[in-house]
Image 1 (cartoon, helix red, strand yellow):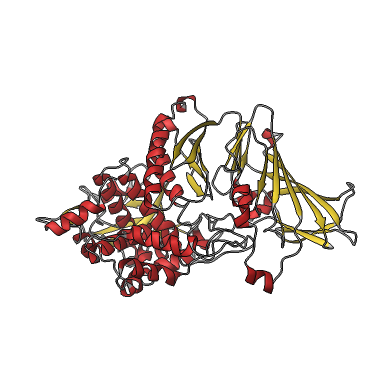
Image 2 (cartoon, one colour):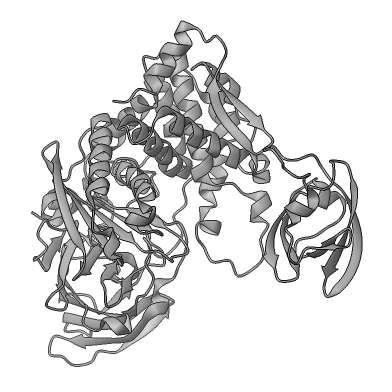
Length: 615
């Protein structure tokens, strides 16, 4: 049974209030056809047929972004050879209204409209698509247009590919099925396709549901998938034990192991996930694959069903703002770490060190003093893998909602456990929100449930814990005050230790990149040594005290000086060389660990054991 048929009754009907206030246009008969016939060209062929057209014109729109990645990519830039035909195959006039909208003139008679176009696809990420001789990785938002005003209409999809290829997706459990039904456009683009002659497939059962693990790789060394499959089974079992079983009958993990890519990736979907790993499975990629899988599978609850109000139904033409990504993404990362511990893939020491690393990352960001978790979430559209065509001060002015969200998840979890003497935890907040925002309300055209606002997170924490967390949210979520690590960790008999790494040089207070003749400053830390000396972003450091940086690292040069030394640098700025003296700061503490306090109380030990228990 396909995901479209499983959810059709829930996903195809608008609410009674919406019907009364704004009746939708009469549904179209929509059929999508995807042609994958010339892999070496990287060109996907798309054909969309709309039947029972009553309007005089139809607007076909390609999304500007893909849900799950908060950046405007303007997928329409890769569309070519667009054409429109009527039911008899005669060409229809069309015009481009804006960067992503094609208006087709249907005429008075109406009837059927067919459009055809090609999409260039050669990027393997969770947002883009790739079509080459080894596979087609298709993410729907980058390929399929929708008909404006008809995103809620049911549709069909057929896929045409070379004879020896097979199709794996969340639409079905059969690799030989090439035709599908979807309840609406949102479901279509929320179901990535992997079409390939090389992709392998394994499966297992958990809680009467089928889970499939698909692997696409370029290396014959990656043929043994047993450890990957075993790890995914453990993750699924642990996460399914925490929250109510989601309303799917089957779920598909699609893994790509692609050494050489600049970035790995992961993208959540309604009943599948799309995971890209930069290393081979046999060459170190297993741990990354399992960590991403733990994150993306937890999204089956947190984001795909329990979701911020802005994240479904979507406006695909523009940014969809929310201040809750710290919770949707960052807390999901916290739970990915927690479930890697709970299922036994990590031990407590590995879990605590990962949390210490997250604290380190946040504390070393100057932007933590300027940007709150809510602000980072809201402004994600500026920097979430978004191409930058102008210089920005992001290294000094921003933080990651992933990173701070993880840390806030840790602090909230421990604070709830402390206030309730271990009887409640952040788990209870997630379960409360899932019941009140996803399971209880009626269905809409997007799916069950309703989205939550930022204030609803605080209300949920208060309700689940029986305590008032208003002050915590004002300081730590909405504000930029220092976070209460010591108090939270002490509840579990733990403490944060911050040290300088042995052999660390004095601090210049810059970020740099190596170049042939020296090092280029890419960022100057506010109030640091370089800032006080008027060094600037873009300066090329050629020498330290006349000793060149061409072949010796800046760190090695600086190790020769004690903190407080006044050191001359040879600096090139705008093609001109000058000498500038810098008074070096003490080394920056970069070693963060979480360890046990001396003589913890029985209550602290009990809380820690409950938190770190392998389940």
